[in-house]
Image 1 (cartoon, rainbow, N blue to C red):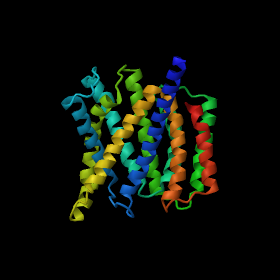
Image 2 (cartoon, rainbow, N blue to C red):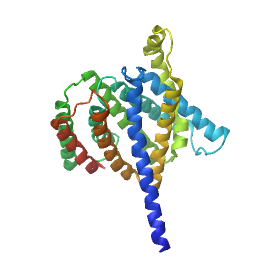
Image 3 (tube, rainbow, N blue to C red):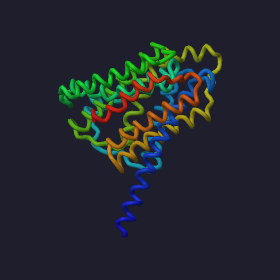
Image 4 (cartoon, rainbow, N blue to C red):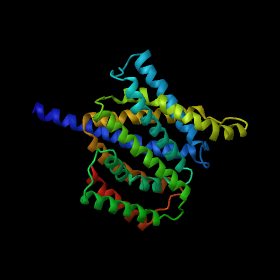
Amino acid sequence: MADRRSFLSEGVVTYAYLLLYITLSSGQIFFNKWVLSSKEINFPYPLGLTLLHMVFSSVLCFLLTKVFKIMKVEEGMTLEIYSTSVIPIGAMFAMTLWLGNTAYLYISVAFAQMLKAIMPVAVFILGVAAGLEVMSCRMLLIMSVISFGVLVASYGEINISWIGVVYQMGGVVGEALRLIFMEILVKRKGLKLNPISLMYYVSPCSAICLFIPWIFLEKPKMDARGTWDFHPLILTLNSLCTFALNLSVFLVITHTSALTIRVAGVVKDWVVVLLSALLFADTKLTLINLFGYGIEIKLQPLLV
């Protein structure tokens, strides 16, 4: 009886963590769209918003590990590992967040999620190039069908912006490269870092990578407005939600597995697509949209 209660209790905790991840991940997507939208908060600086997230994460990780010492930074980091692995991860993380947030200025949240569904294909192809995966006829067929689903979903988009598509696909490539670099860091270099340790090392690097283009691309625009309308409370809460999302990913993986969070991600994607149609006026779903997206989502688990 005690074992059964323990099993049920563990199951409740696991589902609670999954619900937390789906809620935070979905909420953060809508939150970013709301902040960036000219019709809402009107902070049209995706590069600046991403830079703020990384600076906030860097400061918070430093406070948690070095000042209050609530958490511990994993040891084993060397200059060679940092320069060959952490810096590329930080750069790709910055690229992913920057381009992904910029895409929200041009395309709907739902359509952005549909384009993100090609992520497993990008990860697999880059994994083959890096020697981490092996190409096969079965995988080639699955990738072809998923890609076809993306094309169908794109064809069904009513108000398509190719600039937004390019930004979103650039973000997909950046995220795929980040995952590949992280896998190389763990498999080939044997360094295992918990999320706090990873963010402790990666966030400052990402912030630097974002700060340089921000000076040239967005700072002049912000200066031209005369005043920097920061909305400090909203932007701080937005940054805190981003940090909480990263921690929720850690909790899910710790209590389940990376595969489980991939499955939860599929559920989250459907939630985002359907809710965006209700929350945002720029989202118009068609049957062709949903058919193409359904093909993508149905075959994603086969690439795991």
